[in-house]
Length: 318
Image (cartoon, rainbow, N blue to C red; front, side, top):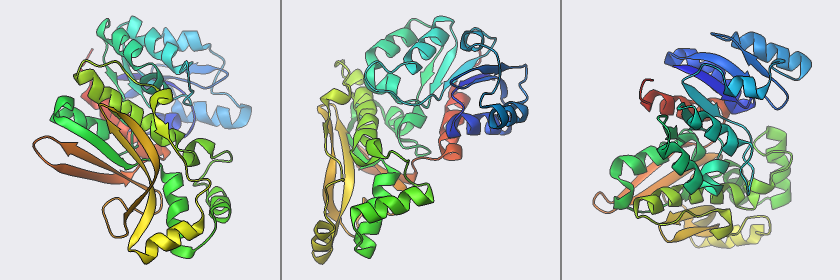
């Protein structure tokens, strides 16, 4: 298939660089200031130009959205509230009967009903595996079992928060010390707010809850509907006390048709949810098959790109 990619950060770049291995051609890439087009596009040249000049090309975003492609990959940064520009980019492609694959959480976390309606009116399909758990096939697992037969999904859905909690528990280090270490290692962003205050995990939980609610004919949720607490004020003494009792603390997101809750929770020290470092885990509670555990890398350019390209591979040929 021919891919047009909006967003030239770690995920967008990885999708562009790996697309050929999956049998696809990239025909356009856009960053925040311009776009590059070609059939196929010289991906290496586009990103070399970006490193030298700050932009992949001189074309306009509208030129990319109106180009000849089969799939729009939306990989711009997640924004809250109106979910722009990701929402409008996706709708523009669906209005042209193109497929859309989202790496951007905003459209399905904040405007789920609207973007689903646009997809229903389109000959194109909408997929968004990469928005929940990176390389972990959380959405696909829910879909394969049937969302109406999934009772709840819970797990560790943010690698930065999990790294911080793991290090605090293992070394007895303070939150501020470990966060600074995570930033030095590139595990945490310069501004890690969305990771440590629970927002990122909550957005992922809302997306899963919306899949479950859609199957039951219920109105979609947004971030504002979630109960969210972060780890910023968690003292190292709390982890020490938990350890004395054979337990530890993890930032757990729980999604069900009834809603979304995110916050630090006590879990067994050697239990399934006590993944360490930047690992993520998703537990899917099913009506007839019990509990399924899926773990792996929940973030990273190549890891998330693999989920995007897996979605592309599931689309119907145009």
